Image (cartoon, rainbow, N blue to C red; front, side):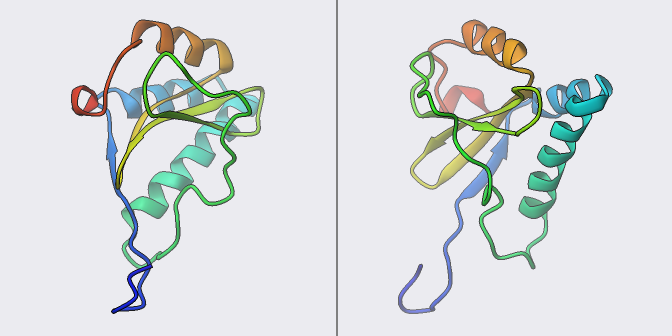
Length: 122
């Protein structure tokens, strides 16, 4: 919160080059995977709408286990079939990296081990 203006200062949100492809892939799996993708689409909608002055990730809990493969990585539980949203957060920048099933996220993390926020933008 900025004391002088009494406004909440939200971080800058970015998306990796292949982020939307991962969301679409999750959606096309159908069922609970589709519901998880719809949650991610709601987050994107909150980010895109300047009138919504709330944390787009409000209500989404980080997973119980930290992530050591990528520095400053925070995974969020999407609540359906172990689906996750993977982000990299550094200072006031949050980069949406990948959304997928638990196994898909695990594979993505292994392939992108050591990635940093600077090297993640598309």
